[in-house]
Image (cartoon, rainbow, N blue to C red):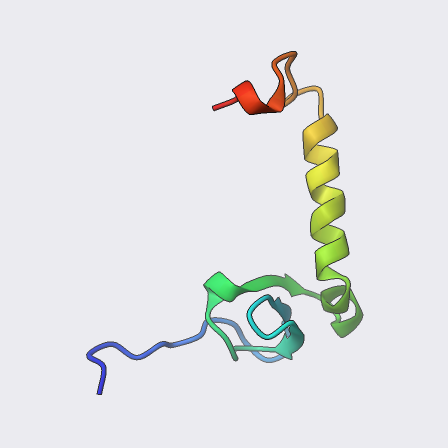
Length: 75
Protein backbone atom coordinates (compact mmCIF):
# COMPACT_ATOMS: atom_id res chain seq x y z
CA UNK A 1 0.00 0.00 0.00
CA UNK A 2 1.45 3.38 -0.97
CA UNK A 3 2.43 5.76 1.76
CA UNK A 4 0.56 8.64 0.12
CA UNK A 5 -2.70 8.10 -1.72
CA UNK A 6 -3.77 10.23 -4.65
CA UNK A 7 -6.45 12.67 -3.50
CA UNK A 8 -8.05 14.47 -6.46
CA UNK A 9 -8.97 18.09 -5.95
CA UNK A 10 -12.17 19.62 -7.18
CA UNK A 11 -15.82 19.48 -6.25
CA UNK A 12 -19.15 18.47 -7.73
CA UNK A 13 -20.50 21.09 -10.12
CA UNK A 14 -17.02 21.80 -11.53
CA UNK A 15 -16.35 20.26 -14.91
CA UNK A 16 -12.96 19.13 -16.18
CA UNK A 17 -11.47 17.52 -19.25
CA UNK A 18 -9.18 14.61 -18.36
CA UNK A 19 -6.21 14.45 -20.72
CA UNK A 20 -5.28 10.96 -19.55
CA UNK A 21 -8.68 9.39 -20.23
CA UNK A 22 -9.80 11.92 -22.87
CA UNK A 23 -13.18 12.44 -21.25
CA UNK A 24 -15.24 15.01 -19.37
CA UNK A 25 -15.43 14.61 -15.59
CA UNK A 26 -17.49 16.27 -12.91
CA UNK A 27 -15.72 17.04 -9.68
CA UNK A 28 -12.72 15.13 -8.38
CA UNK A 29 -12.01 12.02 -10.43
CA UNK A 30 -8.47 12.23 -11.80
CA UNK A 31 -5.33 14.00 -10.61
CA UNK A 32 -5.14 17.74 -11.25
CA UNK A 33 -2.00 17.27 -13.36
CA UNK A 34 -4.09 15.32 -15.89
CA UNK A 35 -7.00 17.78 -16.18
CA UNK A 36 -7.96 21.03 -17.84
CA UNK A 37 -10.47 23.17 -15.98
CA UNK A 38 -12.55 23.81 -14.05
CA UNK A 39 -15.23 24.84 -16.50
CA UNK A 40 -18.70 26.10 -15.63
CA UNK A 41 -20.53 23.60 -17.82
CA UNK A 42 -20.11 20.13 -19.28
CA UNK A 43 -20.22 21.66 -22.78
CA UNK A 44 -17.30 23.97 -22.02
CA UNK A 45 -15.29 21.03 -20.69
CA UNK A 46 -16.07 19.07 -23.87
CA UNK A 47 -14.43 21.91 -25.82
CA UNK A 48 -11.41 22.17 -23.50
CA UNK A 49 -8.81 21.30 -26.14
CA UNK A 50 -10.21 23.87 -28.57
CA UNK A 51 -10.39 26.49 -25.81
CA UNK A 52 -6.77 25.80 -24.85
CA UNK A 53 -5.64 25.99 -28.49
CA UNK A 54 -7.40 29.34 -28.95
CA UNK A 55 -5.86 30.73 -25.75
CA UNK A 56 -2.44 29.60 -26.94
CA UNK A 57 -2.97 31.37 -30.30
CA UNK A 58 -4.03 34.54 -28.49
CA UNK A 59 -0.99 34.36 -26.23
CA UNK A 60 1.41 33.83 -29.16
CA UNK A 61 0.05 36.89 -30.96
CA UNK A 62 -0.30 39.14 -27.89
CA UNK A 63 1.99 42.17 -28.45
CA UNK A 64 2.68 42.37 -24.72
CA UNK A 65 4.30 38.91 -24.84
CA UNK A 66 5.50 38.78 -28.43
CA UNK A 67 8.88 40.06 -29.56
CA UNK A 68 10.86 39.90 -32.78
CA UNK A 69 12.94 36.82 -31.96
CA UNK A 70 12.02 33.55 -33.69
CA UNK A 71 10.26 31.04 -31.42
CA UNK A 72 13.29 28.71 -31.49
CA UNK A 73 15.50 31.43 -29.94
CA UNK A 74 13.21 32.22 -27.01
CA UNK A 75 14.10 30.95 -23.58
